Image (cartoon, rainbow, N blue to C red; front, top):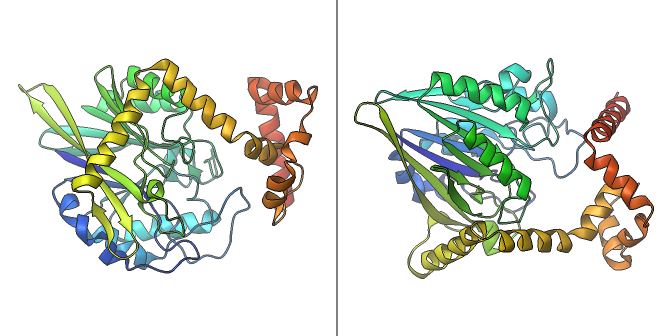
Length: 381
């Protein structure tokens, strides 16, 4: 059995020059055709709805005509557990689910309630049964007991999912929409969580979300990929990091009637405006491998790993503090902050420990989250 995982797919979702999606995927079609099951994270609802959700960040949506070429190259599993799938509310999600149902395509990681969002999908071939679980960090759109949304990356839910999957399948694979955007390593607690899930019985973890390629490692004999970059996500961003990515290929076979063997490989590529998604070759491939190897080396050295995280936090200090604690939001505010460094004035030495306690303490954190959610719900009525 062969499985292929591809990352964030959101063509023509922003105000940029449109691309020919069918042409953009033609150069990698042969890779998908050599795999039995092909997973892609769709980074937006498939809808014509105009009912935007109030949230942090842009509202994205994809037209059906820009999804059909993806299905035509062989993608047969669609991951919906991400921070954009609820960008156009319940209508956007229902349109998305209805579209893929009409195409007989399996969706995972999102549903009309929490139970359906958390549902495990099983796939059989060659006498091997695979369990697939799709999760996302707790941003906007997490499903409730009676409300539509995304399957949450939360241990108390995921424990029972993994337990059930382990009891009913030979191999358990988890995909996570998790990590810090534009940071090529896992945040420390995400790495700990991935290790925990492997210890709980997961065989492979594949992450997406950070929009750049990230490190990967083998922990206790199991593969963990911390970020595959973008798949097809055309914007005005011309950086090499944004436009590079890789597919994760898994070969799963039964050895000696009982033992399961999993081998993994990657297919690095670059998305280009004119030629679409193209596999890297020659010097570009060599440079990519060197970059990935350097990132992987960070995972083997605690001092280097922690240093990189500290540098990332330091470089994003003003943006995070300002976004979290400045009381108002309006167009052009970011530019004002960059000039006058208002983030330095928001929290004084006495306010910082209060803010930290409210965020870090589990009890205070839960109260604060409940209050903010309630306020937002009341304001939207």
